[in-house]
Amino acid sequence: MMTPELQKYYEDRFDMMSYPGWQDLIEDVELMIGSLNNISAVSDEKDLQFKKGELSILNWIKTLKHVSEEAYEGLNEKNV
Image 1: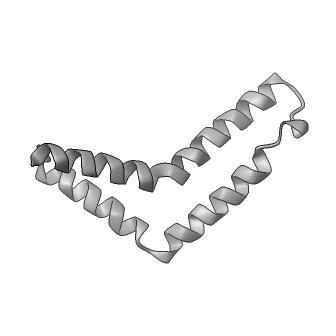
Image 2: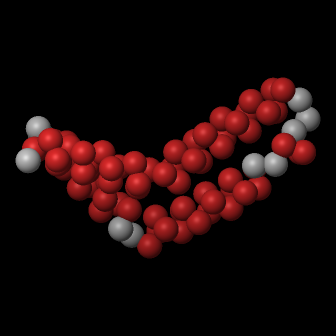
C-alpha cells in the first residue's frame, strides 16, 4: 500500500520531470554518455574505474523517469 508520503514523493518527482529543463538535462546526459563511453581514451585501470562510475551515475539519471514510472505503477497495482 502506498503511503501519502510515498505518493507525494512520486508526484513531486514526476512534477520535476515534466519541466523542459528535465528534458534538457537528459539531452546533456546523453551527450556526456556518448563522450565518456570510449575506452580508447582510458590511460589506466584507475581511469577506467572512474569512467565506469561516471557512466553508472549518468545512466541512472537517464533512466530515472522510466524506473520511477515502473515502480509507481507497481505500487499502484498492489493497491488494487
